[in-house]
Amino acid sequence: MRHDLSLAGPAFRLRPITDADAPLVLELRGDPKRSRYLHAISRSLDDQLAWFTRYYERPGDYYFVIERQESGAAEGLISIYDVDPQAECGEWGRWSLRPGSLAAVESAWLIYRCSFEQLGLKRVFSRTVAENVSVVSFHDSCGITAKRLLPGHFDLGGKRADAVEHEVTREMWIVLNPRLQKLAELTAPRVRRG
Amino acid sequence: MDRHQIETVVLAVLASMLKREVDLNTSRDNTPQWDSLKHIEIIFAVEDELHIEFSEEEMATLDSVANIVDLAITSHAT
Image (cartoon, rainbow over all chains, first blue to last red; front, top):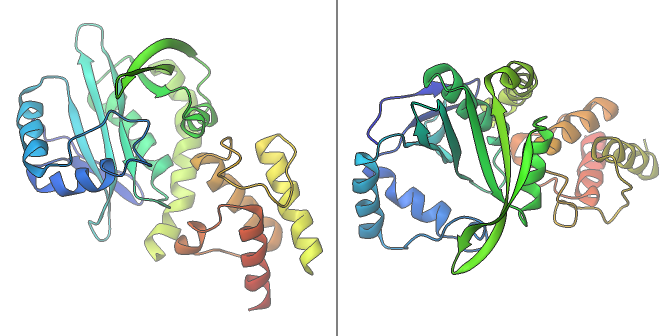
């Protein structure tokens, strides 16, 4: 949906995605190797712009570009979607970063802050293809202990794939937040120096 | 510090952070538990132990024990 949420951390910030970012989406999501665990997208710019048009009208969907604070250079993409105002929950994903990026921890920290502080949600979950062990491990490393297997949850190119769901409640976030914040702050000087 | 001492430090840091056995062939490609968050913690711990500091550009290349050891040796020499 069209939104005006922005959030800044020590080195990176989230800003709303726009039509001008369509080439970035194609660049990051179009690489079949890096996107093999994400839903496939069309490589056509027109198709991406048409997707944006539908996205702008879809309630409860907040798509962001992750960019460097100092230069404004785009570093990746991240979203929170399927936000249910009644249940006060949502899912985050569409997470894609440039190879070698140091924005992983900070962008995850920012999307949780957006979820709990700006959207006022009570719980947020992420669903990762179970075979994508390094991303499952990332969520584990964040300290998230509430997780479960969702058999056959994803449809990836016509094949069913299991998902691992990690859930963070507002109460859990109070515990997880300081460690992610500290790591983001420790990493930031390195990013600013380049 | 010589190469052997640096290897010993790097392997000890990785084993501690990843909570598993590691060797000189361990890399992010063959160790999915070496995730993006652990990577930051590993690099900071290696830097603390060896009193060196990697640049952002260098950190992106430190995706294996061998690469960390090689760059740590270079950093020690300069």
